[in-house]
Length: 66
Image 1 (cartoon, rainbow, N blue to C red):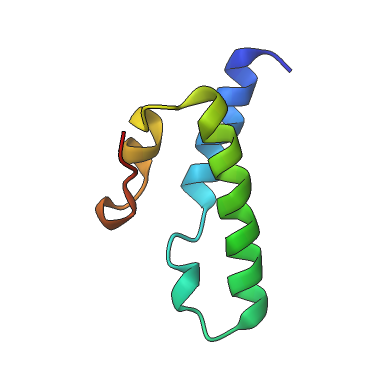
Image 2 (cartoon, rainbow, N blue to C red; image 1 turned 90 degrees about the vertical axis):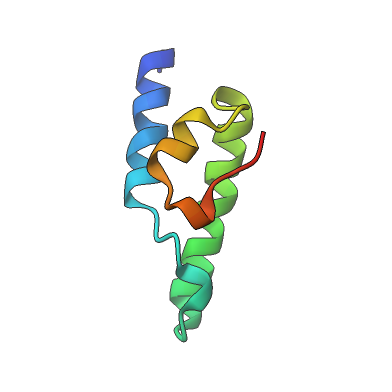
């Protein structure tokens, strides 16, 4: 997978992420969101260290800090 494909995958994952999974009463929703968040953070550390892409897509109350 080339760099552009990885960035596209990252953007797609950010766009489909349930940013408010922490508020779910359904434990399976919470666990899925938590794992997605962990995976997104790992990708972010590699390709978006300054949170530029993240902060463009995430709701304001979920913005990362650089």
